[in-house]
Image 1: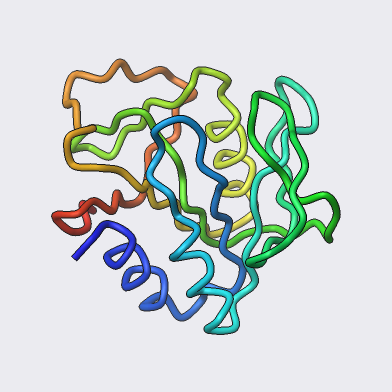
Image 2 (image 1 turned 135 degrees about the vertical axis):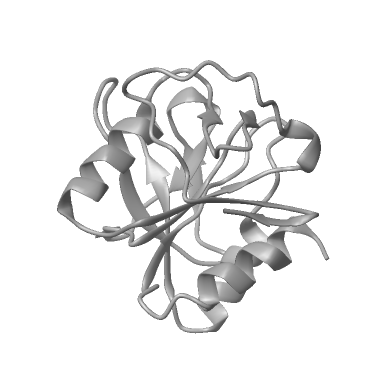
Length: 159
């Protein structure tokens, strides 16, 4: 199985999953769009992150296969329009992860701020999507870093 199949199984096993935030991949990030399309086909609302300002949590705009995309900040594409949604489940991109489910991103702190804000308002599930080779158990961990609830790789689910 591939990491996306493990990811789908974990999300669909969660009865409270209603709004799932995915992402549009950049660089060598594992592409979650096939899993996102499968979630849309199952009737879940799917959204992707939009950076509104440095130092602020992410906002999430509705996404579906075929939605018109435009260039956004930092090289990521974003839906040209669509309603803003608040996710209860997040598929999180990463550069590296640890066995403790700590995450290394691109250094902007967007996901850490976003997860902290969402978790302060209620239960949210954050699942990293990665290749097993991205595991690094010596990641630096800061006081504001938010741990993932799980990481999906081709080997299965960690956490």
